[in-house]
Image (cartoon, rainbow, N blue to C red):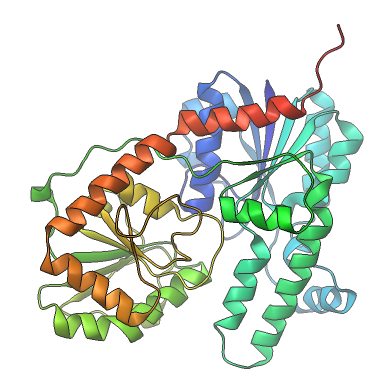
Length: 402
C-alpha cells in the first residue's frame, strides 16, 4: 500500500505530542512494509530541521516541507471574523503547498492520503481533482474544543470574546467538512463520540497514541518525593494548568508534605514561571533527554484544565511504571481507571489529597504505576494500533474488479 502523509508540522524529530503521534503512525506503517511519503508544513515555530533527521527515516519517507507563514496578521484575522471563516484554518492555505501536493499526486499513484489535523482540509479539492486515493483524516483533537476551553479560562475581555469567536468559527468548519473525508481516525473515544453525535457518517476508528515498550525503572534510580510536569510550554493549556497548580495547589502541598519537591520543564518556558524557582520548586526549559528526565522522577503530574485528544506524556509515564496524577481532562481518551492505573483529581483539594495519599503510603504510587504499565503494554503498542488503522484503510479502498 502506498500512503501520502500530509502533516501540519514536521513529525521528525518528534518534539511534542502531536509530532510523536504522527511519527509513531509513520513508524508503524513502515514496519508493516507499506510505503510512506511525508510532506509537511514548515513554519517559523516548527521548521523542518533536516540536520536532525535520521538517514534511514529520510530514505524511507523522502520527507520534505513547504514553508507557510503562520504569523497572525490583524487584517486577515479581521476579514475572516467578518466573513465567518475559520482563521485557524485559513492560515494554512498556501498556493505553494497545494502545488507540491498536486505534483506528488501526478507523479505517483497513492492508495491513501492521510491528512494530519483538520487544518489541512483546504487541500481536499486538489487531492480529489488529481488522485483516486482515499482520504483519511487523522483527528488529533476536536480542535475547537481546545480554543473554547482556552477562552473560558480568560477573564472577561475583548481577547476572551475574540477567542470564543475563533472557537465557534472552527467548530462550524469542523462539522461542515468532517463528511468530506473517506474515513476518520480519531485519537480518543470521546472525540469519536463527539463527531458521531454531530453528524459524522464516515467510517471511523479510534487509533490512540502508540507507545514503545519501556524498561521498568528501578526504585534506586528515582528521586523520592519528586513530582514533575513535563510539556511544551508554547501550548496554552499546559501553561494555564501549571499556573493553576502553582497558585491553587502547591502552597497546600508545600505546607503539608515536607519532603515533596516540584519539577517543571518544557520548551518555551514563560519567564514568569522561571521566576517561581525556590528550594522546593525547580523550573527548567527544554530538556535534552526527556525520557532520562522522566525516569529520574517519582510522580507524573498532568493538571490540564482544557484540551482534547490524548496526552502522550501520560502514556509515556505509564510505560515506565510511574504513578500519574491527572485531571479528568488530562486523562481524556485513555482507557484508565481512577484508583487502579491512574489517580484523578479535578479540584485543588482533590489534587492535594491524592498527593498526600501517595506520600503517606509509598506502596500506592508503585501499585498505580505497575497497573498503568500493564495497561500501556496491552492496549497502546504500536503494532496493535497500526493494524487497526490498516483495517480502516482496507474498508475504504475499492476492491479491484475481477
